[in-house]
Amino acid sequence: MIIVLPNLTDATLNELAMKIKSWAQAFGFQKAAICDTELSQTETQLQQWIDLNYQGEMHYMHKHGHKRTRPAQLVQNTLRVISLRMDYLPEETIDLNDLLRQNHLAYISRYALGRDYHKLMRKRLQQLASKIAAEIQPLNYRVFVDSAPVMEKPLAAKAGLGWVGKHSNLLDREVGSWFFLGEIYVDIALPIDSVVSEHCGSCDACIKACPTDAIVQPYVVDARRCISYLTIELKGSIPVEFRTAIGNRIYGCDDCQIVCPWNRFAKPSVEKDFQVRHGLDRPSLISLFQWSENEFDKKTQGSAIRRIGYHQWLRNIAIALGNCAYSPEVAAVLQHALNRHSALLDEHIHWALENLNN
Image (cartoon, rainbow, N blue to C red; front, side, top):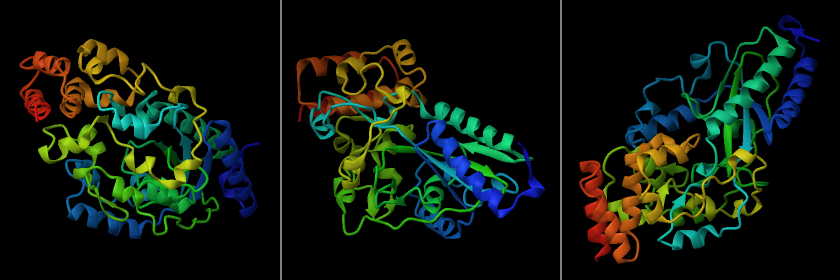
């Protein structure tokens, strides 16, 4: 039965909210919750963060005006946000701390080991939104997966999916933080869910674990120092002051999540598409550095890694090779790559060779 919008009652809206949460699980989301659109405190905090230039070269963080913190300016007449969680931790038996210590192997952020989450989640969100639209007409909606000016973590916290931890990631005390977030903006006044309390307490494990001291104070990250920013968002030269600290992390960084006590409750993802592809869970740095551009394109097809491109990929691996213990083989592959790609890559190779010899 199709419900026509003017006939919506509180009872009907409550029933619809329960249906949405049930449908969400059927479409592969682990949890869904609903919040309103009031983000004035977040707007103030975001502006303070931008004023400190902590966004670095992520100019998209401020170019959309207030659309990021005022959902109805992004999607007209938005009244509620349906926030959804999808777990991504691949099922593996690798000790991540041990992997970070093996400097001849590459560390890739666990979220990027499988297929790109953007397409998978967008499809599921669209399916869920279409299901809602089939129940309620007319419905104005739009789905988002890290692809527009949306404050996904504050919205998820407001909806009660967790709390924003000191490392700025969302935390759920039952599953930790290894999950993606997605949103559906809708123009119906669904009942909102309750905010959950914070449970970081006096713990500062994430702050102490950050290799580049990017968590400049609890809940505040200077992106310019963050390894995820440096290896993914930054397109030019990586500042020399951070290169040694990057270690063998060639795409993103999970250190703050690895040490978080709440992640002892994390559950492996049930999504086949989030499982490890092409042996990227513990690959050899030398083997990755020797990929041709065609090989990079082929093996990162459908992967989030593709977004950085081949030359940035080599730049990151060159730094990691420079952090290896010296061996003739490492020196040889670095030397072989000189003057073959770009001045930017050559700069990082020269640094790597010098660092190897120190």
